[in-house]
Length: 223
Image (tube, rainbow, N blue to C red; front, top):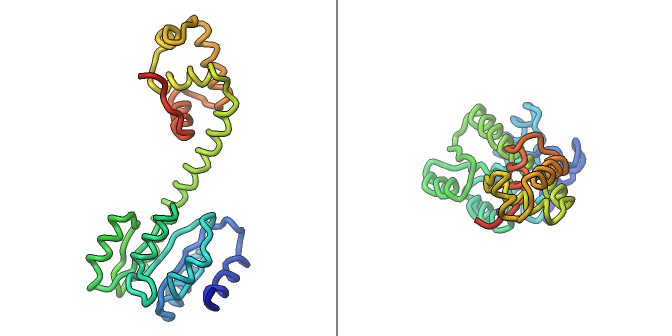
């Protein structure tokens, strides 16, 4: 790992809580890195600057939360290359592309690949801060969705086979009488299973139950 990357990561590890969201800054221009870092830290953001995409990738852990500010044109790896590699690794880190006026077509490609925003140089403080706020809000939504999926999957494991069958049909919108017919049980038994499913999944409504089931990637029963 390059010396600059090591220093950046030591700085990151020494600040706040390990899971605190971080604005990762990747730009080969030291003056730009310092300017962005100062701006963001004055606003209370945690930052980790890197001089190249390679340094960032060598240090990055997918468990770190936050967003990425990356310049399009860098010697060893462009911001687009960096974004592509992160996508291949399944990263959900929101990406903001920084671009010169001549790089706008490249930035549009980055947006199509999932970038949150692209900001043209010379950029204003307001543009950077607004974009970072949007990116971190998106990161928070992804984190919340991931946490919900983990919780829902854990609760799903507590269901019996019959309760799972009832749940699958509830996700399809089946009425109790229809579920009873399909499973060859009484409507009253369906009601009992449904109540137990609601309790075990910790759902306070049918719509909440469906959201939890979809978060846990429940495959609906027979159509």
